Length: 461
Image (cartoon, one colour):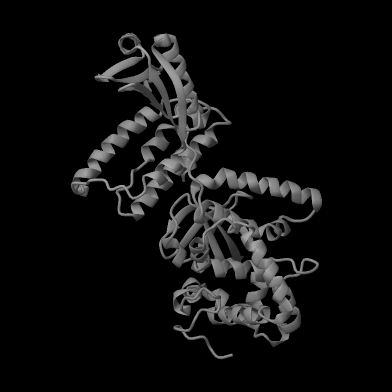
């Protein structure tokens, strides 16, 4: 085949021009890789991929491709709309990641892949550079990494969350898509003395997915060890590579609504309890004399309680003609409010029913609502106001009991061996959110003082 032009379609199947895809990703590979023994140029890499894809498109692999497509989606598209399916199938990384997994990881027969069959049958027709690339690519596999550092247009420092090792990775294009503490699954190719490159596809995940993904990996590894004792971890990651696509669908493409909890640790559910008023004067009198209720306007009462750290708002009671309505944010608080009213007002109000709505339903019900905005606040005014608010908030946060820390304060939790890593993860997630906010033009908040206050400066580096 002829040399691939910069403006030709990239042979990896992304649909992009070669200069905007694989040439951009590998055009700055170290000279030792290009000119050393057994080395390959970006052109050799691209032509090797093109030949392998052509081989894999042969009729002898028709059944394997159908099975691969079914495994790749794993039933995750069955309940999706045609528009959602079309959206995910047209994403550039979808075809790249499918081809990478199908060609190098899918076990066709006796742990042999499409790439293995290609090298066995056609290897003698390849140039040394093409053969060198395919042999190196066949050794790679998807693993889960945490982004420790990003150098734009130069690369990443990635931490392998399975082994704990860190790698300096040469990369250009993807450095514009990731920020510190993001998670990614990718395939690292070892270039020997010249370091590492990411090759063949990248999955991105939010930082909050770290513990759930590691828990899932450990469960899969336990099953792997039971079925194939003594096999290397490289075999394990080859076998479960498809799961990184399933997790990407679950966490990024079709993410679940984040679980929200109250300070008491109960699931957030918008709760409305209705009562029929039987004796209005007696009801009003009982509400006004209760120590946990505060009249905020005629017929409306704020319900709250004092905690060692702060005053906690629990809900509101409102008189609406012949009805009393209790509104709060959890089923447990709804039950507490009902008991409070029955003990306080007795037969002055009679319970009728309780309605529940989860946050996702509430947001969907409000889609399309228009909110009046008088105009944006200039950044030079907004930024210092937000910083002052966040400074005050996080100073209090240090000494607040958090459900995520089993109701311990961050200042206390960081002194405990089992909770210290959890505090670190909370700080990473907060920094990660601010880094993504900066990508949208917001001024990021600097959490450096918080790391120092908790004695965690070394863990941040």
